[in-house]
Length: 341
Image 1 (spheres, rainbow, N blue to C red):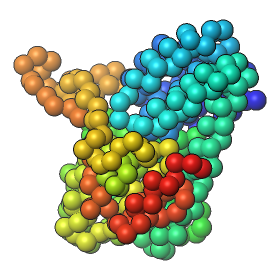
Image 2: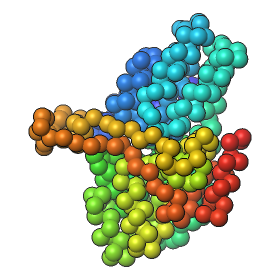
Image 3: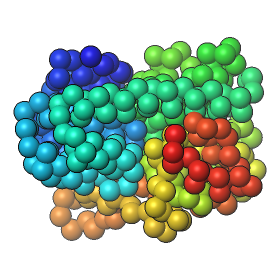
């Protein structure tokens, strides 16, 4: 079986990914040859988005199983790949499923079957999230979104951006404010690219403009994605999400998070238990892309602090848009029952 998505292809056992570091001006596909290369692809953000990272890693291991005949060596490589990003729990969930298969009955057929199931499941989860979330959106609303949460972050229609796309497909008139999402500009580079393809009107704004836009009463809702959700509803997402939530609380704007059950960490009681990835200083000191590299801070002598994610407490969340429905503060404790699906 061959699989295709907006930013991923699995053809005759070969995994190829759309290099997201080169978007929106250059659409380049990269063949991924084995877990070692996949580790680097994930680490350098050529592939990104919590659900997509998990699916990509699973398909990479499926391809790898065709050449690795020994289950123990396969499991060791899977455990190595599992460490490529520490915050997005979908990666761990997907790899743990393949490791379980390898321990029980290791074969190319079984590993590939499970990886294909993970792919198909993500498609279905995105559709469910989008359907539930679209019911919350009224005609002629304006929405802020952060980072990128569409078909470039999943193999389906997306999470937060999938909700927006579904509402748009229902004929609702929408306008989107797109946070550029510093320091790597996933909103400016990727979300605008997707919205162009979807023909949804938008304005790109700097992250630090969101509060002023809310003050001017131009925002009806904020919808973001998540990389890990704790059992109490606290969640990690791209850095800058917490600031948005605080601004929403002050201005009385509804703040929603959209994610699949695979983003819930069932072993994580609260947000205090979520590990936050620290990335390299060069991402703050300049920018790399299809154009090369631009540097605006000195390479040496400029100290930096670069957490890739922040953690938003549940008390700031209006609702959690999940594949099983929309949860609020009175029902969020029920997510512990979503583990078995």
